Length: 170
Image (cartoon, rainbow, N blue to C red):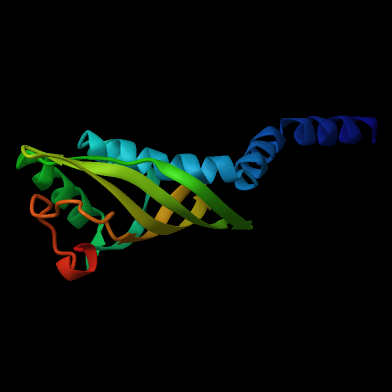
């Protein structure tokens, strides 16, 4: 019996308790959710598809500029804009995170800018995301992005996209 108790103690001691504790810490961390969103934007900013794939779920899709996009569509669109000379800056501000088990929602203001040959246009987007915890890592399943109206007097002619322009003009 003594050997059975010792063997059981060893098995319990070798169980993945630290990994479970780490998963629980990640699962309950609003900062980890926000950092996952930041990692998506960092990967897009430098056209890093492998880094993007590490934070997107296999079933990822987004609503942006009046279109539904999967991961391929989003990556190709941003890369195409980069190739045509347009650059973006993104910054997640005022994140609000709700976590329930392996599911998280986040809303935030994405404050940044769009740059092209004619200059910089400051931009703010209202965004929301749905993430799921998989193997101890948050993965983005869905993102919704809506541009806020520009400040009065801000030029829009140099920002080609599919967004309905009357919404963003003065």
